[in-house]
Image: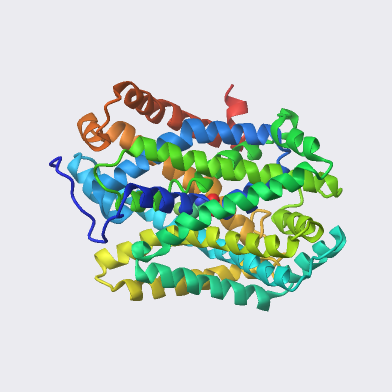
Length: 458
Ligand code: PFF
């Protein structure tokens, strides 16, 4: 391939900052505020958080750089990007499968992501209605249980969320969302800091911090380690082409590495601040840190119910959580939509409608897994739990592993240096080393240990 930059047929971000905000919008979402605290709680806190942070640094950041690089070099949907880059590098056309698995993962994730985002929408309404003013932990629990027991209500919010997502996707990601994200993300962060201030005065701040940051390795199971690694991919939107497709709209002159560091830093800060706000509230109210997916929905309303201006802040918080989920969901389905546009010659709107209907249908499985199908299990997991496990713990790390192998081993150094356009050769070499050796080894070791195979081998 020539080293002159090519352009995406879908357009380009207008400035470097737009890419930073859009990619941060994709990364920061339910994963940071809803999922991170509850899986940290389920897996005993500190040791889990440590493994997660380690994975972010040695696996997440190098793969993020690799994924942006692939996207910008290919400038097409992830499937076509992998097809053309493997051709240019003289590699097997099978690399295209990496794009396909990403499209599938995005579609599967969005199907349940939308249901959870629906919970946030429902809580906006509950907040406005003052349901939680001066409430007790028991009442907050009841509100949550009643929501999950109501398939009709869940379906309604799920439907609404899919519709708003598809409206933005149909108009094109660069059509205005990025401007909203530039303002919404910082607002969400400010609200988290307000919650953090509240948590500091909750009487159990130190207890919360100890739980989150003091590693107790006896509390971490083999599967917990896998969940921590999987979450590093999930929270950074890696391993499925979302960051790749956003990278394909990135301007050629912008620095990939510097941008990736900013996104990873912002994402990690949001998760940690959310954790630091939530766990003190958990302990101050005698709640269970391992309560599961309902954790934020059972703790934060309690805090908002007690604080001055709680009605206002609570409403705003759930609105912002919804926006954070919205800006992530768009990137989940963007790889599928761009592929339909490129290869099936579809209009964006038709492609979006088709994807929307398909994800909506699959999402009904998650809706029902909280009520009518709560006893239906596959491998000891409900439909929702199975989808979550398959995507976050298996598909994304596998996708990330293959991205690392492709960029680390199958792409020529010349292409990489040309795309990175870096002056810092030392940093380039460190990244290259992490990607070639550390990332593949770490992912393989975590996979093996989670099956118990590693213990048998050594
Ligand atoms: N990173 C998002 C979150 O933390 O909520 C979820 C996500 C978005 C995962 C996009 C994967 C993805 F491609």
